[in-house]
Length: 404
Image 1 (cartoon, rainbow, N blue to C red):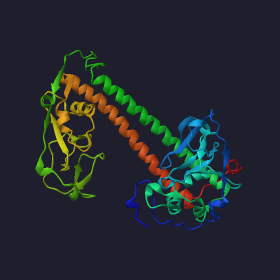
Image 2: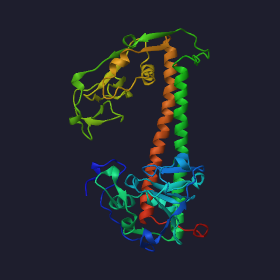
Image 3: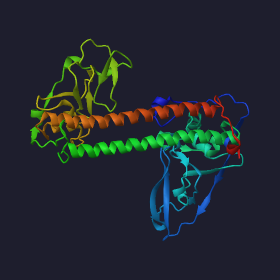
Image 4: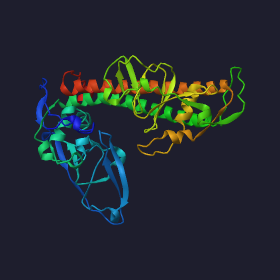
């Protein structure tokens, strides 16, 4: 079988290897745990229906369309209920599976989905976490056939031949309860992060247009003049070719970080002696339109990485926010620097007001960064805990309330 690296990150193509059977668990085919449901829906032309889909990477079951029966092209449809476990036969190699939420109960799916419920002794919500395990994902890949990754079809009969180590019902429930607590913490943090990002966006819109004026150090609202500057008045392109590194020379580790035009903040590392040390600077992706604020010594990537500094009349950090807030049309893999150079930038003349705006936006960025780190930490901790719980390497104490 081909290596995982040949496929998208959502696909786990490696050979499934089941771990040792923990004490008190059973080695079972999931056919012994799951029922296949087929609640036939007789489509009526004038009746309205909700059709659902399942997002990749276990992203959940969501509403896809709301249609009248006459507008549904595939008439062979089946009802789903809250708590059903759905598997997309065409997308499960990408992790498209999940539990049906309450609000989508009564929706319909075609026969391109497997609709599953739990048999006696099996707690179906356990599937939501089991589906995140590497072994589960690999068995789904090896139970699918097709010549192209985007055209592979899942075969339920083949999948049911794979054995799984299944804990007793009481332990299943306890594991679900523990991991659900982590999911709740992750969900709360995601909402806080989204809210902070939206607040920063609104704040930028107000502060960078002058609609909202801040207070100076004496508590008096700034009232100075705002002006328009051309790119050449506000910024200086300050590339140093001798410090650039070709992508073929990137290292996975090294003493000097490489900043290029890609989405990642740090693209790689090098050990070059000649570095870009006149920081802070703004890095602009000529092809990608990515804008980065860099305060540490680095080496720029050789392809499309533009290093920009600000003129004396512009606070450097405010210059970064102005460029970040500039609308540049996507020209594909073309050079966007010429588009940027045609822009005008509106800003206050008072350098103290510039600094205050930059400080407020920097504080918003710091809050977002803290939440991003917290979210990443929660996800990593949940992943590690889940790996231990689903393999029985860490056992849970089962109380009577959970066991019922």
